[in-house]
Length: 255
Image 1 (cartoon, rainbow, N blue to C red):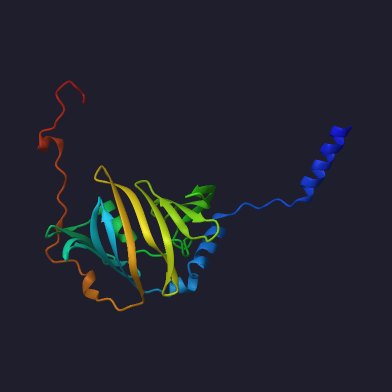
Image 2: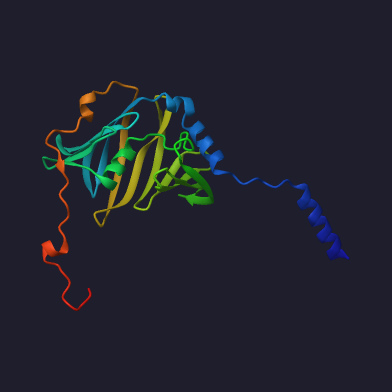
């Protein structure tokens, strides 16, 4: 009898407590956009400049980036005043300059660069053809985070981790990268992470980058000339085939 009464009491208590509704991806993204300054403030951004420093494979470098929305970006990496690498896209062409040579980017390389020109990916994500799914909770550096999988209209998948207290993005993962974000500050009415640490796969190697942003300018004048592809840009050389390198499988080995 005592067991029956205890069970009945437990059921009564459980039924009296309202069920906690599970967060949805859309609710999380909406709170995230509000935390970063709001949809209107984001929509009012037309240009951005970023200046900072980075460590890539232990080498200190200076970083400058220029963005004109929609679809234009130019970034430059230098060391001791010498330009080591530059890359740009104007919504049509994409190119990269290294060691004095400029190459036209195509395929995934072009798409990756164009994605850098897109700010506020999650703003109006449904109108852009994207979808989002809540994957549950996780821990990022010991703090609770909401995990959301986002699939773009181009079928690129990114998993975002939103801090449960602030709704700032503190980590994102793709098929080839794992990036953490911290030191969030406001610039031009929008919150940005000023420290970005990335671990990515490039050319079959694992590359680590640590970026510290010193300043961000919002809606500042940017010269159109930055987004003109250099006239000496040439097609990217194709990787040699095994036959061209002499690394053909031995006959009969099948390897």
